[in-house]
Length: 298
Image (cartoon, rainbow, N blue to C red):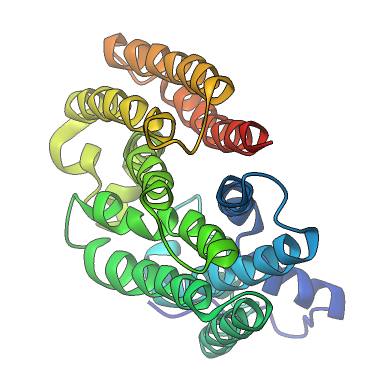
């Protein structure tokens, strides 16, 4: 596959160039990761860890995740061209050359380490880079095109931000930090498989072995339901570890039961009519459960 060239005589203005580079970072996706980073900082502190520390950690987290996303679009430009959801990305359309996208992603990763390391500590900086490496190396380069477990194992990259936030405040990683990691880790499969149900044809056309492509729709719906049960159980663990109290417990149970209801309806639906509702609620679920953690910390 060759990247599509821009039409002759068409030059992008400065603002359009800036917008394309911002798009390389996938800001809408990153916003959810920043929720988990910031909330973990409040839980680690047991209150407000300081707004400047929060701000610089979130900036560094954005740079790390944005760098990973830019490198991902460099690597996946061939299959992005095949999938309708991704065929307008800047690298695919030729608005940003592959080499520049790669250099931009690497630069953001380096900047992330410096921002977090200098504003908090180098453990948090190393964890931010670990998230980038997991996403690019384990998910994009290794598992995405080879295994149905791509978003299960590769999903660990998206679970790193709470560790970054925790380490930025405390300088270490306690059991509670790893529980926050686990919440995101077990949330990822039901979230992403609901999306994969909606994009089954795209993934099949691109040759990506997502669960519904390899094992079918019914097995995917069954796995979403099973992983939702596990996710709800894991979401209660912050109370057991002492990281959260009654407010969070009630919030986690209510939010989890709504998720379970949607997963059950999806499982029982002979088609995939509930996949969209399940996917969109999963985004809200993760944001709200970490907001509940932060509120409980006060």
